[in-house]
Length: 424
Image (cartoon, rainbow, N blue to C red; front, side):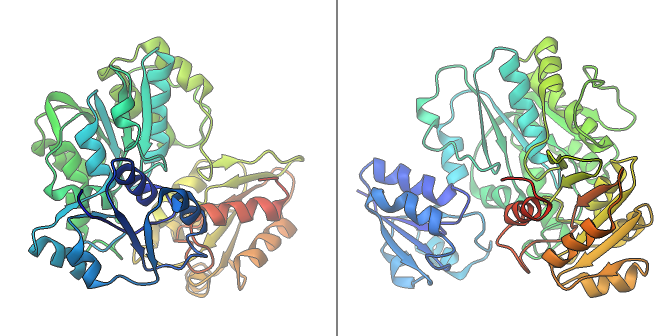
């Protein structure tokens, strides 16, 4: 049996899936993570019955030296010295997604992009399902497919949301997919990627992996996406403002032009791997916003509350403001990721009120003089409730990361729901 080290248990399932996979095959497994048990409470509980060893709060060189296989969580820095040490000692370094791609035998659709990945991949899966095709949705959306891959019935199509971190870690992997969607490529995660070029290069990895003749779906107005067309063996199809969608989108129940583009991209990919036009239309009619993604909360009264906590870039927040014709009260703030604030500052002029909070709050207040400043998230939401009038949209679309006050965007969105009186 080979000794396996899972580097990074994490909170989103990848570390748990890897530990379960190798323990199920009889391998001794050590899971190591810099966080403590409280931060990883749910993941620790999931691996407790597996009989794995667990080291929290630190990584140790001796553990890496003793391992035969190192499974790296996507959140680990790309040039981590312990990963370099493992490679130098000829250890097998893999990721949960890399292992999954080795095992999947059916057709694969990969979806990446700065924003819109989850909605677009979910739409592709819904279109295939409505067309009667067996489908499995997974990846960065929070559902690892590693332990399902070998049990999938023949003909199952895997739809994978894939982040830039996951793609960067796949640099050394040899894999092939049948269709790729790149929703857009704008600056993000530059606190992790050393340059914008490195970030864009990780996204390009997906189109490079498309089999000859496969489908490559790219945003026509996006300069970086346009450059990707020269780096694929697949057949390129464009979507966007000036491109006709492959099916009518009139009954799409998602706000915002960007979601119309996401739906068009999803339909192109779904049709390329076996969906029917009728199935695409049925999915479009029945699709509802995903949690924390321009999600209109079920609140009583004439004020709409919208949870768009997933918007962690200024450009995403600007798109959210543009999605509504009603007056918007914008809640913005959090931790800066080193991106250009200009799109958010311009969009603030279109909001009826702007309430800034968190680490970026004071600087936002200086750049948006008409805004109000509150010291923290709770105070900002309460102020929004005070100034909201019938017909308004109270929009949580922060434009920044949540880590100044919350462990993730999901916790921030859940707290918003609590403060506006919507049950979780």
